[in-house]
Image 1: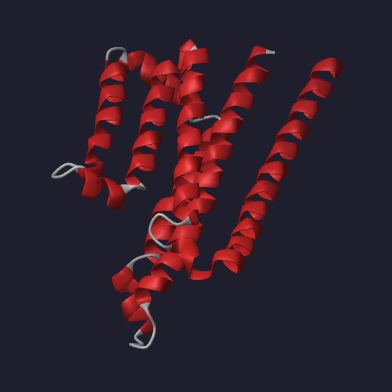
Image 2: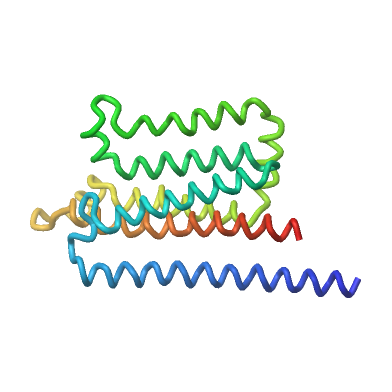
Length: 211
């Protein structure tokens, strides 16, 4: 009993240490954006600028991380493939302006092929996928992913919505488009960093379960 209590305390301390570490990484991502803004000025947030390219790289890393977990962990394969495909689709979506020019009529929307294919694969064993989802909902990584989605979707989209800013600022001398990108892009990047950290947390959780 004493040994089990000590083990549980160590696991709790390790979990708390990881959460502090993730917070430090998020704070460092903010400091990095401050430094990059000092170097690149307004070029930091232009289409295909440093921030947008970094966002795509982070999303690609997160998708690869989830795909690796799908290959390593058969018990979570369907769910991890679905999450990896959704993350990859989000990465492609970040390149929408370029892809819309390069691929007529279709543009970036070919990205939907990946999550649809993954969903079809998951439906072959929907009971198993439901079990995977039920277990995933109890994990720390799921909570981190929900935080990431909260930052990326409602927060970034609210503050990055042009008509909202036009109504809010109501000043013709201020370029609302610049303000929109200055708010939306950095907030999205923080959310994407959180998403990448959530995939790392899932790797750690699975490693702990095996040991």
